[in-house]
Amino acid sequence: RTGKGQFIDMAQIEVAATLIGEVYLDYNINKRIKKPMGNRNPYSAPHGCYRCKGEDEWCAISVFTDDEWQRFCDVLGNPGWTKDPKFTDILGRLRNVDELDKQVEEWTVSRDAHEVMETLQGVGITAGVAQKAPYTIKDPQLKWRDAIIEIDHPVVGKKFYPGIPFKFSDMPLPQSTPAPLLGQHTDEICREFLKMSEEEIRRLKEEGVLESPSI
View 1: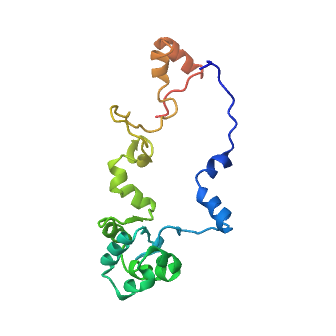
View 2: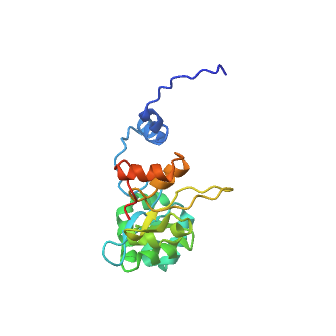
């Protein structure tokens, strides 16, 4: 309102603290100090990356609610261990998470990671393959969003590159082009932006001031 700017003093730790309020509350009320949990989650079980069929193949799975748990059990075929009372609600599953993780991995380890992901996603359960580079390039969602694009470079040929990570609702994005070669746009810049004549451009090239295109 004054038309004058102000100096803002803001500490990163104070900003981050607003995102972990439950950690401070737990300490103030229960005197518990938060410890690293790895892939686990205090509100979800099973929750983690589970080994799947093949070498170094994994699928992340997260089951939050008891309704999701029942759908998860249905996908597994409701084996006997899923009916154990200690797994029937989220509190029990969190208390017995070590045993739960072993049971879940017995199911995932004999199945393809993508099969596990697609099957669980099909019933509304959060699941995702741990993506390797070849999987990322072929990922249908990333391809649909042009997150990974193929560009033909005059020297190295066709290669995959990251696309523009954002989209506009009413404005098309510019087409991505390969990295320029040395001197590729020299003539264009001299003519269109510097308004130089062909004779000037030729002379400067002869004198070594300008570079001709590398190919």
